[in-house]
Amino acid sequence: MFNRLYIHVPFCSEKCQYCAFISRTPQNDELVEYPALLSQELRLNSHNARLLKSIYFGGGTPSLLKPEQLGRLLTEIAEQIGIHEEAEITLEANPGTVTPVSLKTFYDVGFNRISLGVQSFDDRFLTSLGRIHTAEQSRQTFHAARQAGFKNISVDLIHTLPEQNIEQWRLELLHALDLCPEHISIYGLTVEEGTPFARIYPPGSAQLPDDDISADMFELADELLTAAGFEHYEIANYARSGYLSQHNSGYWKRDGYLGLGVAAHSFLHEGHGVRFCNPETLDEYRHGVTTGNAKRINEQRLTREDELSEYMFLGLRLSEGINFSAFEQRFSRSLESVYGTVTTELVKRGLLTQDAHAVRLTLRGMLLSNQVFSRFL
Ligand code: SF4
Image: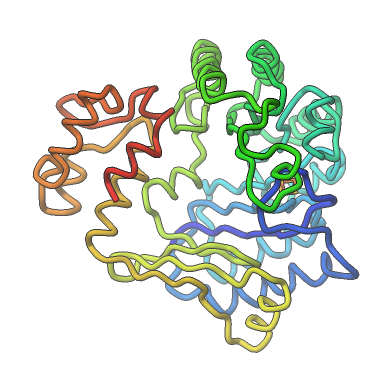
């Protein structure tokens, strides 16, 4: 069972230097073919769906597809499954791939949220990252999205860039605030194996800010953005009141979601939950969809223990934390009886805090979240 839909578009105009996501430049008529494959997959896999609360087109760069193509797909989704009238429908868009006209058409065909891959407002960093746009284009795209009607716009930023210092990061945050977005996502750069960045900046490279600077950048974002009225509602995410990402919150609350497209992940409520992903190449994906024999890759059927531990490490990502009575209702056991020893120790170390109702990460706990989560595995 699922009530959220993720659609992966594995194409980008050019490959960024730091990118380890499944995406590549499109060839021949792949951009024309791909929406048709998504429609076919939708028809194969839409059983056990509930009225959709959110739809998220991610990538890659979904804004490379034509708004009319995605509009037709949204119509089919509405016919096959049904979309709640207040559903959040997000398009990830990269500056340089949209125009005022295409943004207006994306809005008119049903998208109500844009997640804009700005990453930096400094052209030197944008060039070193291999982004295809300038900071000015990001600003223009943001204003064009507003003009097109979008009342819910998110901006992505990356910190811990090579040779970036804390003052440069402060400026990035202030530039983002100048735009008055409803939502800001903030990620620290990780240099992933196999990317051009991994060759340019091997482990220990002097050009990469160290862990202390990275921690200062994380804390500065919290300080500036919360002072500006944003809620730090998840480790990497900030929102104005009423604009928390519904779709991503669903992931952290373990709502079921179906992933369509190359390499898309799914989580369905079968038993204690089942996770799997689609084939990672377009050829394999096409073969599965066109023969009606779509393969589930890395299928993992969760046990009750898996469910318990996921409930903790996903739920703790959210600043609302884990509510004790919700836990007890769900598992017929108190959180104290299952994880009391671990939570007491993490509270003593200043990584968790708890009151009568819930246990949550502290700011330091968010910073060291991997250490915390490993205790619930
Ligand atoms: S736009 Fe995003 S998905 Fe595409 S190459 Fe750049 S970082 Fe990767």
